[in-house]
Image 1 (cartoon, one colour):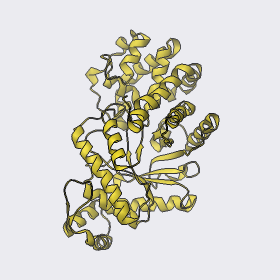
Image 2 (cartoon, rainbow, N blue to C red):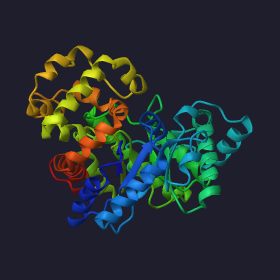
Image 3 (tube, rainbow, N blue to C red):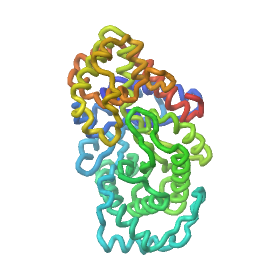
Length: 411
């Protein structure tokens, strides 16, 4: 489970959620993740994430595995992560549609020819029709992207040594979801590149927006998710990929309507799962400050006031993963009049609460860089309000995410 932490203060609070899960018999590996974009916006470094993770593990006495993820990297950005990271999310979405050489496509199609005809994948509802034309089309769309993943993987392996890090390949920021056939032959291409893919992040139908529930057809997602699990199992049998290969769900925080579906599916398939939750911890910090009242609440209100006035700047990097209805945002004047309870109820993801505002939540979610601009003041407030903040951070990960997804209990 990926746990982002914008400001590097919540490692122990995050880890306590995993310790509570372990006490209930479920061993979930925490992965502290941060992208190059987030480092750039906040002014942090990859080694800061490593230091936070190591310190949290030591202070909490965590004895199981944990990792530090270089999130959404490519050849242009990976080098600064090499000394500190042992998990690399290779993002090749931008390479989808770039065409490999005719010779490479021809070799790939020839090697995959044995799968032509009606390909039956156990767990996929209908046989997949595979033709030379469809293989050529898949290769033209995805082969270059997988070759790029291979180049990045080998670059990392030259520095870290093979077997010393975890590799994820991410397609989730593609324009269209991958079909079961496309995912199967993508994994075939990854095996040809000798990438030991531990997790793969396909794009699913519907919208996985920052900090709010899934938007889309839940029944369609359920079928798609189960079929993707089936494809992974079949690909492992056919291509010698790691037995630990898992689906990875990006922007996976707060997708409460999907967790029961995913829980049942991974239990049925006896499959693993990697869920990335990214910025949820930042939101819980703001909630914890608001709940504490006083200076914490005043800071939260001032942050929103500034974010409201700088909307376009805040939204620009995240336009593909937010859906904010600006008229539905409360004005700063309205927020200034809120009590601590009213602020928390508007921001906290409690769908049963009539005050909860998904647009307000998304606006705060993407405004973390404003806290970075006031770093000293913000960190002082985090230090001064530990009990309130830590309670919210731990409970959010444990009660809203781990328990419904991995333990199968109601959120």
